[in-house]
Amino acid sequence: MDSVVKIVQPAGMLDSSKGSLFRQEINSLVENGATIVLVDFQDVTFMDSSGLGSLVLALKTVRAAGGKLFICSINEQVKMLFELTSMDRVFQIFANRDEFDRKLDSLK
Image (cartoon, rainbow, N blue to C red):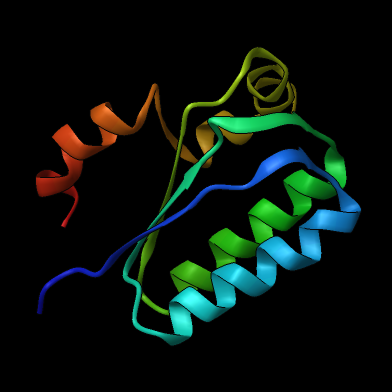
């Protein structure tokens, strides 16, 4: 079975107000057959703990459906949040979308 890769690209702040929309988008992708989800943080300027919580719930949703979730293009603030909460050990993070694309074949 071929993997269905979908990319989510949130923008601005990923906080409590945008977190529920983010989770809905992930749920929709999974319901529509996505098996690999890439969250591209290129346009995210800030993420707080509730945004991180939304990301963890998204990971659980994707994994529960037998899929994989990856992250790319995080900025320094998000990177620091991941490191402080040890989430950098939970999520597989790529420097950018090109690096993800190069690794994609081995991820399937």
